[in-house]
Image (cartoon, rainbow, N blue to C red; front, side, top):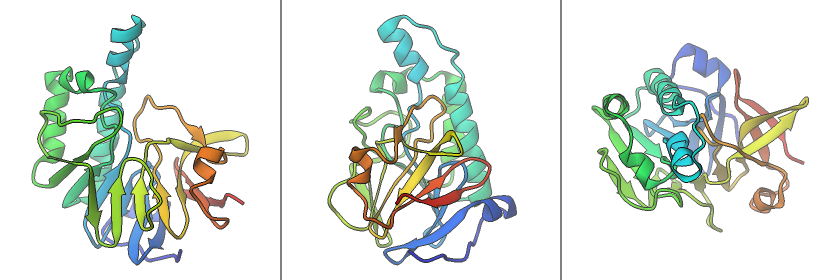
Length: 228
């Protein structure tokens, strides 16, 4: 991995993001947990899990504040405003289940439609949302952008960007959602407001990466630390 200059992004996010090159494609890990590919004009987010509070209410009867959809879409609107992408990739588990996708209220559907307007929007199939939803955009199992392949769950392939595991890393006693990156792949943090996480050092995640892997912690500033 090599540090790369940052382009086409707001000054604040440029200063707080972490830039690197993966398999010849220049990338920026944004402090929000989104991945920005400046040369491709592509913004990628993973594991939004929209409608999780609705799904929990349906299955358990436990009522949670229904604000996670608004909070997640507002954060996404900020990243879209900062980068003005030509393409947005939602890297699977965008909805907590297919019923949650269908139950979005009219205001949230309009909010999402406004974010989609004027740009290509790709829904990658996840294990929570394995089929199409009636919300515009294209539905794919994976997509290639530049030298990189985008899919929901990591495989043995090189030059791969995936999500699914919701990695988190603990630093100074605080656990934060994190990208995990080495010379072959990226596993994205969960972007949604109501998502848990799996420690980056767990065998499930660690076995995917080489000894020089790094975690890029999200928060006010994207902070890279070695996993070794």
